[in-house]
Image (cartoon, rainbow, N blue to C red; front, side, top):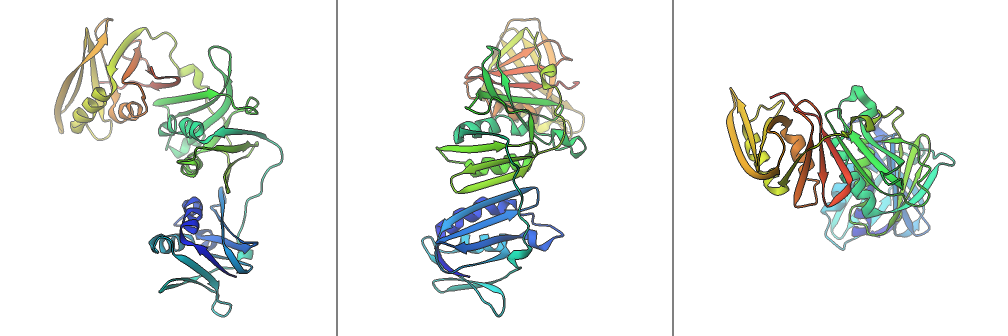
Length: 373
């Protein structure tokens, strides 16, 4: 194998695939990226056997060939080369080392045979649709923070993506994530072809890799979902991943329907106040007490060991006074997703979940379970 490629093109392709690679693995070849050179193109593939990422870049190929090289080391070397450099890649047949030359820099990387590299198969059929990259990014950003990290409840370790109907009966594509303490839901008008998408659970790592893949893109991406896999095409890049085999809970049951106590606050002021008072909260629960009164909201923390703090901010609230506690981090996560200047909280009582709404985005909803304070 022998080729010359522009450093920027190689770096872009590597950045799309190298994050898939597990840094610690008992299978050495899974730490490598597969490099295939032919027909004026360098094709790169990385996998952890659950996710596979493929991308390609234009190259001047003088000798076809394929080999695998350490993904992390190759990425770091290319990243540190001067911008605009022409990178020559040459597989030494005697040492079986991959020689990289750029200007006066030269590196030799160990390799493993391309024949030993395992690639994922794709399923036949499934549901396919095109979606604007920005819209898909929004579905991810509005929900992924609520994905559970508790491995025993594996069916919550991802985003639930499915076709549904909104309150007006219109078809929508909806994403939902929950960890049992909070829930995030976002939806958009169903792209053509997505109306038949039954619920699938996209793993956390895959969600993050899809988001990284489409970051900054303004075009459409193609999504295909089968019973066991999801495939995303973005330009020349392709991401294939297994889905979580499990049943997502009936999330509609936990979305409050009768909460009639409405609190409206300036979102930025609320976010800053929560951040300040939670500085002295207990590390494990990080609970903050919200005291709701006429025209005001008081946030307070009182802990025997770490101290106490409170702050009052202006708010619109016209119902009976109430005290309710929440995890500060969860409040901050939701506040970070609110696009409006104001956030709306709908309460029932101190023991019932609260519904948080964004006046600037009616298609997003957030549910928070209270804490005892």
